[in-house]
Image 1 (cartoon, one colour):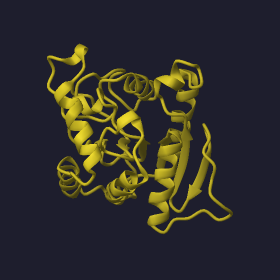
Image 2 (cartoon, helix red, strand yellow; image 1 turned 90 degrees about the vertical axis):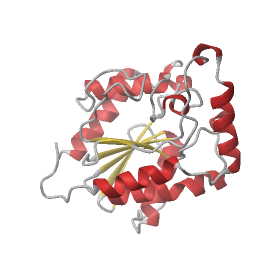
Image 3 (tube, rainbow, N blue to C red; image 1 turned 30 degrees about the horizontal axis):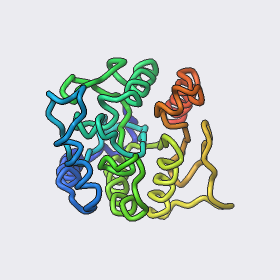
Image 4 (tube, rainbow, N blue to C red; image 1 turned 180 degrees about the horizontal axis):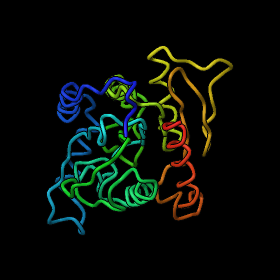
Length: 236
């Protein structure tokens, strides 16, 4: 499902960026935390190996939708080695993408399970699991070039779907850094908010975190609606 008028992504450059992300040790606090978590583990995963490194993006390099989350979960992506894999947020996300026809299965608990995405690529604003799920401004800025370079290499992207206010802010910063700005002030984050910025449309969604899904702030129909919104825009 690609746009024949667009240029296909350079997969070799994307693979090189992936390798660079995985090897990154720019932020001492994040390096120390992700590796501590990987050593000490938690009881329910004590017999499993942990990834304990930064997470690259994942999905269809020729996709028209780029989903941007906050950061890996300490015992989710930091354990499995793939973004949104092995935690409750991922369970919610994959099910929605499956219902929208963007994923070939409704759940994913391991990075080697063969999950395939169509027309969709997923990345995080910060690539290492942060303590309390709260990266510092310096850590955010140190990671920002990775998302900017991914967007450059993902040449068919039309829609950026930001999960949460942090993801929304990361997308705005990335687009502004590429010379794409919105006239009339900074767009406000909201579930279902959409704004055209240069050649892209930025769409906002509440993050599928447990604090949102367990409280009902984000329901499956709400998430399906915003994913469908992104799909409709991307394929228009």
